[in-house]
Amino acid sequence: GLGGEGIDTASAVVTIDQDGSVNIISGLTEMGQGMRTAHAQIVAEVLGISLDRITFNNTDTSISMDSGPTVASRGTLAGGNAMLLAGKELVKRLHARAAGILQCQADDLVSEDDMIYCRSNRDRFVSFEETVKSCLLDQGISLSAQGWYNPGPEKLSKETGRGRAYPTYVYGCSVVELKVDTETGKVDVLKITSAHDVGTAINPQLIKGQIYGGNLQGLGYGLLEEVEERDGRIKTGNFDDLLIPTIKDMPEIEVIIYKTDDQIGPYGAKSVGELGVELITPAIANAIYQATSKRLRELPLNMERLLLGRSLSKE
Image (tube, rainbow, N blue to C red; front, side):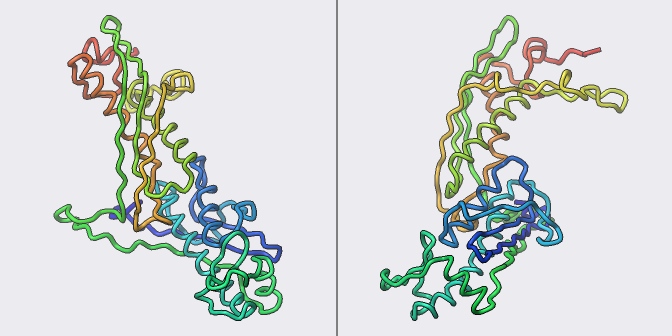
C-alpha cells in the first residue's frame, strides 16, 4: 500500500441482481495482475456463492469512488478489503431477510454453497436466489452496497522517520544460481528460487504467475536493460536498443509460497506484486560476486562492466 506516502483508501461496489448474478466494480484497475479474479473470489467467499455468478465490470468513476492509483501492490490489500466490506454489508441484508423466512435469528445464519443455513439446524435453509428475490420483490430491499476501505493514518513521524509507515509488510527471499564465462563476461542465470510470505493465498496460481513474471522483470533489470541518456535525450527509446527479457530468457524458477495469518488483508491475504521483481537484481549481483569476487554496483550487470569495470559507449 501507499501507507505514509499518501491516501491509501479504496472503494468497491457490489450489486446482486434478481436472477442471483452479482456485478462487482472496483475503483482500482485490472492490468494483467489478476485483480479481477482475486476480487471475485473474495466476494464469492463472503456471500457463500459460486464464482461463476460473479461478473467483474470495468472501472467506472461515475459509480465507484476514487481509489487512488493501482500501484504499490494495493490491488488485493486495499481493493480486496473494499470488496470484503461491500460483501459483508450485503450479507447483513440477506441474512436479515432469510431470518424472517426461516424464523430464526440472523446471527445464527451462515451462507455456504449458494444456500443460507441455520447453524443450529442445518435442515432449515433457503437458497441464495430465493432470498435475493424476496429482498428485491417482496421487501424492496436494495442489494447494492459500496465498500470503502480506509486503513487510517499510519503512525509515522516525518521528522524522525520512525514509526509504522505501512499497514502491513511482506517478506521474501530469492536465491539465484548462475554461471559466468570469465573470458567473455557472459552471465547465464540457471535457476531462481523465490520464497514469499503472502499471508493467505487467495489464488495460489495467480501468486505464482506474478512471481514468475516479477522474477523475469528483475532479471531484465539486472542483466539487460540500460537507459542511455545523452544531451538531455533518451537514446534507448526502442526495443532494439533497450533489451528486455523474453520467454526464451526465462530460467528455471521455483516458487515457494509461505502462508501466514495477516490481520490487515482480506481473509489474511497480503500483497505480492512488487516483491517478485525487487529481490532478483541484488541476488544476481551477489551471485556474480560469489563467482568472480567482483562487486558490481551499477546496472545492468553486463559483460562490459564485469570485464572492464564500465559500460562501453554505444556511439
